[in-house]
Length: 322
Ligand code: AVI
Picture 1 (spheres, rainbow, N blue to C red):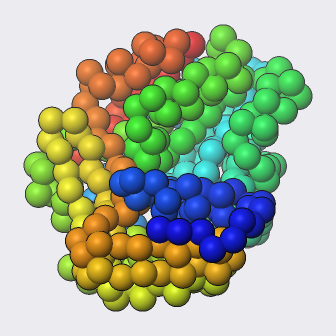
Picture 2 (cartoon, protein in one colour):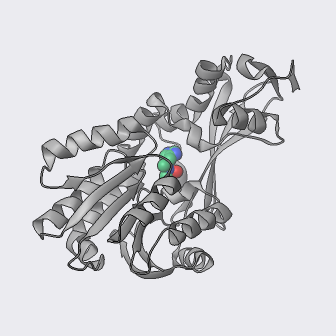
């Protein structure tokens, strides 16, 4: 690859795309999947028959709603239910309904970097569940968590659902958990979803569905580079490829160049050369078992106090204390 002339790269997207596509081997972060189109494709993924994760977590909430909200172990002063990366709140609504039905005193605080996501959720909850007090927060997780720590003395339950932590390699997951731990007072809790190790074929199918929606989701990062950075990727010249290592529990997504080709990205003044069958690594989706989660907790200064599983043992939600 060669850069035609030096250019100042300002946005995170520009900098990271440049870094990833000039590295060997090439990579792009999965956080860049999520523009307007990527958000929609992810909604479709969650409804796919192969993508068991969302249904498994939904089943856990439906089956154990009362036990889950009781395990939040809240006192008379009430608590803040903080959700990082709230999405459309479909699963959370089951817990909100249970909390309201049992007259818990709480404020629901969804946090997301997308203003659209938070506003959509606020409007939806206002009409569907008017009894829930909601205070949406827009911003980066840790900025907002720090603010919340300083602002309120109430107990905090911090939720991270959807096995979102699985998109981080273990060292970064530990960093993330440590930062959450730092934002917690002693009585606060984390309630987090972890997809479990299972039959390797089931994992591969979940990330390589028959209709090709996951492939389109993966390729969307190239479409985004075309749109936002004036690139000329021909997405049809790349193959969506999934691997799963049952030993480490790591599923990996790649985009593989079907032929030798050169791509221009004008806004980065960059030409990217691909050999035939060269790959771009785009995502990891880590799978866990109790021992891995225990190890992550220990490394982060946390301990597991409870866990909830679906019937098929596909997925678990763990409760962590400091
Ligand atoms: C958001 N994240 C937990 C999803 C996952 O399972 O890794 C994203 C995803 N990628 C492909 N399908 C779904």
